[in-house]
Length: 213
Image (cartoon, rainbow, N blue to C red; front, side, top):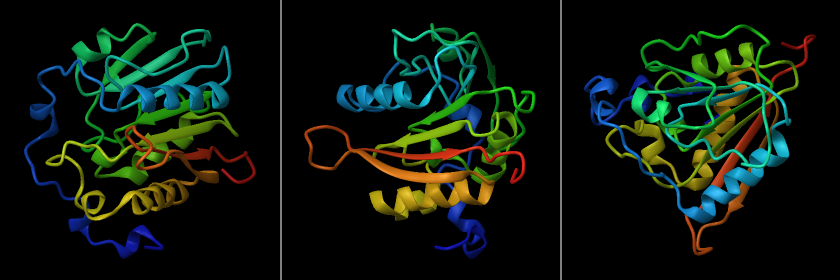
Protein backbone atom coordinates (compact mmCIF):
# COMPACT_ATOMS: atom_id res chain seq x y z
CA UNK A 1 0.00 0.00 0.00
CA UNK A 2 2.38 2.66 -1.26
CA UNK A 3 -0.04 4.81 -3.25
CA UNK A 4 -3.81 5.32 -3.37
CA UNK A 5 -3.61 4.66 -7.10
CA UNK A 6 -2.78 1.08 -6.15
CA UNK A 7 -6.24 0.71 -4.63
CA UNK A 8 -9.26 -0.37 -6.70
CA UNK A 9 -12.50 1.66 -6.53
CA UNK A 10 -14.03 -1.14 -4.48
CA UNK A 11 -11.70 -0.19 -1.61
CA UNK A 12 -13.96 2.75 -0.83
CA UNK A 13 -17.29 1.00 -1.20
CA UNK A 14 -19.59 0.61 1.79
CA UNK A 15 -21.89 -2.23 2.77
CA UNK A 16 -24.73 0.26 3.14
CA UNK A 17 -24.75 2.20 -0.13
CA UNK A 18 -27.84 4.24 0.69
CA UNK A 19 -27.20 8.02 0.79
CA UNK A 20 -25.39 8.92 4.00
CA UNK A 21 -27.92 11.54 5.05
CA UNK A 22 -30.46 8.76 5.62
CA UNK A 23 -28.19 7.04 8.13
CA UNK A 24 -27.49 10.30 9.97
CA UNK A 25 -31.05 11.68 9.99
CA UNK A 26 -31.67 10.77 13.64
CA UNK A 27 -29.26 12.41 16.11
CA UNK A 28 -27.02 10.15 18.18
CA UNK A 29 -26.15 11.79 21.48
CA UNK A 30 -23.54 9.19 22.35
CA UNK A 31 -19.75 9.13 22.49
CA UNK A 32 -17.90 6.89 20.07
CA UNK A 33 -14.86 6.25 22.28
CA UNK A 34 -14.74 5.59 26.03
CA UNK A 35 -13.81 8.05 28.78
CA UNK A 36 -10.10 7.21 28.90
CA UNK A 37 -9.76 7.53 25.14
CA UNK A 38 -11.69 10.80 25.21
CA UNK A 39 -9.25 12.18 27.78
CA UNK A 40 -6.34 11.13 25.56
CA UNK A 41 -7.84 13.03 22.62
CA UNK A 42 -8.30 16.10 24.81
CA UNK A 43 -4.69 15.99 25.99
CA UNK A 44 -3.47 15.64 22.41
CA UNK A 45 -5.46 18.71 21.41
CA UNK A 46 -4.02 20.56 24.39
CA UNK A 47 -0.50 20.02 23.12
CA UNK A 48 -1.19 20.68 19.43
CA UNK A 49 -3.83 23.40 19.14
CA UNK A 50 -2.86 27.02 19.88
CA UNK A 51 -4.85 28.92 22.49
CA UNK A 52 -6.78 31.71 20.81
CA UNK A 53 -6.53 30.02 17.42
CA UNK A 54 -9.34 29.33 14.97
CA UNK A 55 -10.17 25.64 14.86
CA UNK A 56 -11.99 23.31 12.47
CA UNK A 57 -13.72 20.29 14.00
CA UNK A 58 -14.44 18.21 10.92
CA UNK A 59 -16.92 15.31 11.04
CA UNK A 60 -17.97 16.43 14.51
CA UNK A 61 -21.10 15.92 16.60
CA UNK A 62 -22.40 17.16 19.96
CA UNK A 63 -18.97 17.00 21.65
CA UNK A 64 -15.58 18.22 20.42
CA UNK A 65 -13.22 16.85 23.13
CA UNK A 66 -11.40 20.19 23.40
CA UNK A 67 -9.80 21.17 26.72
CA UNK A 68 -12.37 23.06 28.76
CA UNK A 69 -9.77 25.35 30.35
CA UNK A 70 -8.40 26.72 27.06
CA UNK A 71 -10.13 29.49 25.19
CA UNK A 72 -9.86 29.33 21.42
CA UNK A 73 -10.93 31.78 18.74
CA UNK A 74 -13.65 30.71 16.35
CA UNK A 75 -14.43 26.99 16.41
CA UNK A 76 -16.08 25.88 13.19
CA UNK A 77 -17.87 22.54 13.30
CA UNK A 78 -18.93 20.25 10.51
CA UNK A 79 -21.07 17.15 10.61
CA UNK A 80 -24.00 15.27 9.17
CA UNK A 81 -26.65 16.08 11.78
CA UNK A 82 -27.61 19.64 12.58
CA UNK A 83 -29.23 18.80 15.92
CA UNK A 84 -26.00 17.21 17.16
CA UNK A 85 -23.94 20.20 16.05
CA UNK A 86 -26.41 22.67 17.54
CA UNK A 87 -26.05 20.91 20.90
CA UNK A 88 -22.24 21.26 20.85
CA UNK A 89 -21.41 24.14 23.22
CA UNK A 90 -17.89 24.63 21.88
CA UNK A 91 -18.85 25.49 18.33
CA UNK A 92 -19.00 29.12 17.21
CA UNK A 93 -20.77 28.08 14.03
CA UNK A 94 -21.29 24.93 12.03
CA UNK A 95 -22.28 23.56 8.65
CA UNK A 96 -23.90 20.28 7.59
CA UNK A 97 -22.42 18.69 4.49
CA UNK A 98 -21.96 15.23 2.99
CA UNK A 99 -18.24 15.17 2.22
CA UNK A 100 -18.61 11.92 0.29
CA UNK A 101 -20.74 13.77 -2.25
CA UNK A 102 -19.21 17.25 -2.05
CA UNK A 103 -15.70 17.49 -0.56
CA UNK A 104 -15.14 21.25 -0.98
CA UNK A 105 -15.21 23.14 2.32
CA UNK A 106 -17.08 26.47 2.57
CA UNK A 107 -14.13 28.14 4.31
CA UNK A 108 -11.54 30.70 3.25
CA UNK A 109 -7.99 29.64 2.45
CA UNK A 110 -5.42 30.04 5.23
CA UNK A 111 -8.11 30.83 7.82
CA UNK A 112 -7.73 27.94 10.30
CA UNK A 113 -4.99 27.40 12.90
CA UNK A 114 -5.67 23.72 13.65
CA UNK A 115 -8.06 20.99 12.53
CA UNK A 116 -9.38 17.78 14.05
CA UNK A 117 -11.06 14.62 12.78
CA UNK A 118 -12.03 12.31 15.64
CA UNK A 119 -13.33 8.76 15.20
CA UNK A 120 -14.65 9.49 11.70
CA UNK A 121 -11.91 9.17 9.08
CA UNK A 122 -13.08 5.62 8.29
CA UNK A 123 -16.28 6.91 6.68
CA UNK A 124 -14.66 9.07 3.98
CA UNK A 125 -14.98 7.73 0.46
CA UNK A 126 -13.02 10.64 -1.03
CA UNK A 127 -10.41 11.10 1.71
CA UNK A 128 -7.71 12.77 -0.37
CA UNK A 129 -9.94 15.50 -1.91
CA UNK A 130 -11.35 16.26 1.55
CA UNK A 131 -7.90 16.42 3.12
CA UNK A 132 -6.61 18.62 0.31
CA UNK A 133 -9.36 21.02 1.27
CA UNK A 134 -8.14 20.87 4.88
CA UNK A 135 -4.65 21.76 3.62
CA UNK A 136 -6.16 24.70 1.74
CA UNK A 137 -7.97 26.18 4.73
CA UNK A 138 -5.13 25.63 7.24
CA UNK A 139 -2.54 28.32 7.71
CA UNK A 140 0.99 27.16 6.76
CA UNK A 141 2.51 24.94 9.43
CA UNK A 142 -0.81 24.37 11.20
CA UNK A 143 -1.67 20.87 12.41
CA UNK A 144 -4.37 18.36 11.58
CA UNK A 145 -4.96 15.67 14.22
CA UNK A 146 -6.76 12.53 13.03
CA UNK A 147 -7.65 10.23 15.92
CA UNK A 148 -9.37 6.86 15.76
CA UNK A 149 -9.97 3.66 17.67
CA UNK A 150 -11.13 0.22 16.57
CA UNK A 151 -14.81 1.16 16.74
CA UNK A 152 -16.96 2.09 13.78
CA UNK A 153 -20.39 1.77 12.24
CA UNK A 154 -19.47 -1.27 10.14
CA UNK A 155 -22.03 -0.74 7.40
CA UNK A 156 -20.73 2.80 6.79
CA UNK A 157 -16.96 2.30 7.10
CA UNK A 158 -15.21 1.87 3.75
CA UNK A 159 -14.15 -1.61 2.72
CA UNK A 160 -10.41 -1.05 3.04
CA UNK A 161 -10.82 0.13 6.63
CA UNK A 162 -12.74 -3.03 7.43
CA UNK A 163 -9.98 -5.16 5.92
CA UNK A 164 -7.08 -3.65 7.92
CA UNK A 165 -5.86 -3.97 11.51
CA UNK A 166 -4.86 -1.10 13.81
CA UNK A 167 -1.39 -0.73 12.29
CA UNK A 168 -2.90 -0.83 8.83
CA UNK A 169 -5.38 1.88 9.74
CA UNK A 170 -2.58 4.16 10.88
CA UNK A 171 -0.56 3.54 7.72
CA UNK A 172 -3.64 4.16 5.59
CA UNK A 173 -4.40 7.48 7.26
CA UNK A 174 -0.75 8.53 6.94
CA UNK A 175 -1.00 7.71 3.24
CA UNK A 176 -4.14 9.84 2.93
CA UNK A 177 -2.32 12.79 4.49
CA UNK A 178 0.78 12.35 2.34
CA UNK A 179 -1.31 12.16 -0.85
CA UNK A 180 -3.20 15.30 0.21
CA UNK A 181 0.02 17.28 0.64
CA UNK A 182 0.56 17.33 4.39
CA UNK A 183 4.11 17.55 5.72
CA UNK A 184 5.80 16.17 8.86
CA UNK A 185 3.39 13.27 9.19
CA UNK A 186 3.61 11.40 12.49
CA UNK A 187 1.84 8.27 13.75
CA UNK A 188 1.26 7.97 17.50
CA UNK A 189 -0.22 5.21 19.64
CA UNK A 190 -1.99 7.13 22.41
CA UNK A 191 -3.52 4.08 24.12
CA UNK A 192 -2.23 0.64 23.06
CA UNK A 193 -4.58 -2.32 22.70
CA UNK A 194 -5.09 -4.22 25.94
CA UNK A 195 -4.64 -1.18 28.18
CA UNK A 196 -8.10 -1.43 29.76
CA UNK A 197 -9.64 1.12 27.42
CA UNK A 198 -10.53 1.62 23.80
CA UNK A 199 -7.23 1.67 21.91
CA UNK A 200 -6.49 5.07 20.46
CA UNK A 201 -4.24 6.14 17.63
CA UNK A 202 -3.39 9.49 16.09
CA UNK A 203 -1.96 10.54 12.76
CA UNK A 204 -0.77 14.14 12.77
CA UNK A 205 0.25 16.22 9.79
CA UNK A 206 1.11 19.87 9.25
CA UNK A 207 0.04 22.07 6.38
CA UNK A 208 3.12 22.75 4.25
CA UNK A 209 4.93 26.03 4.24
CA UNK A 210 4.31 28.40 1.28
CA UNK A 211 7.31 27.24 -0.73
CA UNK A 212 6.02 23.65 -0.71
CA UNK A 213 2.24 24.16 -0.61
